[in-house]
Length: 128
Image (cartoon, rainbow, N blue to C red; front, side, top):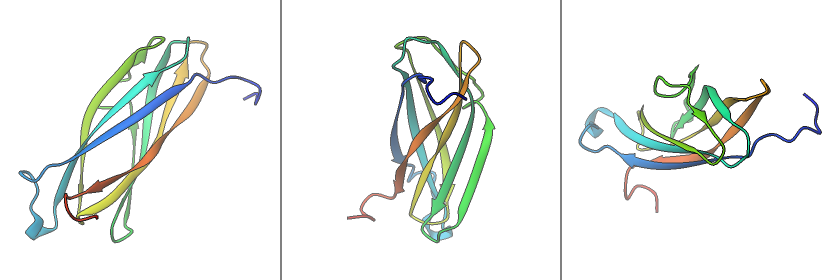
């Protein structure tokens, strides 16, 4: 890839929710849902092709998740469009983190990676 190329500008935001009603703390099973919003801030149309997540629990155990698209979709985002989805993960500890990347493709076929900034998964009142 030519380093002079200007890649489309994409914003990724996250919201996390602890799912107390589905978790079983006595069995070290902590369930979190996360909602991701991907916003295409560029003038180009882009498509999300795949995802790569790195999930780390409080014991420093790492799970890597790779797959096509998100929640069974490979969304196409036109200029100024956003796509929002909710998914979840299970941890054996009350605190953990997630970060990763999306592989995207521009209309001209150029593929590029978008970083998903690290966010914290935490049972309420565990972190101060």
